[in-house]
Amino acid sequence: MNNNMKKVSALMALSMALGGGAAYAATLDNTQPVHQTSVSADSNAAGAVNVSVNGASISDGYWNKDGKVAMIPLRDLTEALGIELKWHKENKTAELTRGVLWTQVITGKDQYSVNKMLLTLGTAPEITGGTLYVPASFAEKVLHGQVNTTGNQVTISSEEDVKTITERGVITRISNQDKYKSIQIGGAGTDGIVLNLSDETKFISVEGKEIALTDLAIGMNVEAEHSLITTRSLPPQTPTYTVTVLDDAAESQLKEVLGTAGTIENVTTAEGSISQIEITGTRLTETAPDHVVLNIAKDTMLVNHEGETVKAEELTKGTKVIGFYSPMLTRSLPPIGTAWKVVVEAPAAELEAK
Figure 1 (cartoon, rainbow, N blue to C red):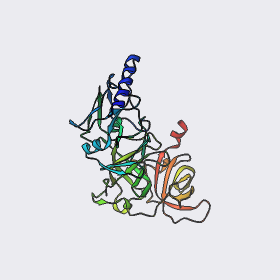
Figure 2: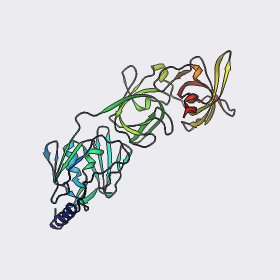
Figure 3: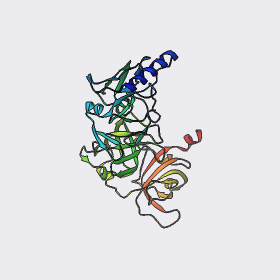
Figure 4: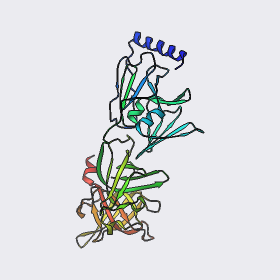
């Protein structure tokens, strides 16, 4: 650190001390916190910021121009944590990868991309003396480490065990474009959750065999192991480690599937049993209609998002459902087809109660 910067830091620290300034903790707007960063009242004291990662010292950092945020060297941090860093000189951007973790750091921009999640930390990355620095909260909020700041010392420790959660749901959307791959389960539109995928994500069939993302189709019931960390967006997004298909092999072979999510407008019965439902809502695929009539056959699966069988009597007018069916539809308006699977999301009585 040059002498001018040290003088500025010292003056800022003295001003804060005399003014009784409170310690500052950077906030994260778009994701749920995992750890609480500890910052002591004298964290903006003069001098360089000493940084250690998992007990080993790395290059020093410094206090930012406001004297409130500890800035730490990004490359030293990632090397200490075993994270690969690729520097793009043309746009001054760093790309970080490790397992399912992928993030992008853009110089001068307080926007951190983590597996397609956009986070803000209150402080933008900056280049000082040819080195890119990020706020200390980056190690916590983005890299999921534990950060403790006491005086001019920042201590960072990586999380030993990745905290995950497992949940089941029916696939309503699949995105398989370049490195931005994801599937949505548990609902359509703003409902459910988006599972962000990486090259490290494992796909397993119900028989326990390894499969690929291309083997998945909308309408399949899956079990996903994903991070406890989710964005506050609608729907929330989260890094995902394992996706297991719960449908048996015969059910999972249906590849050409269309889907419509909405509410039941009409129900037709024949011989005391439900024979047709009319759904108005939103198409799940480009070639699917927003308004469709589906025949309910003997082999049509009627389930909830957990994959549990529901009774046909739950298919009543006003019920929120997702219908999955083959592309073989009549040319009538609305088109008519046969349902492969109908997922009951919310009975009409529950929707009325809300």
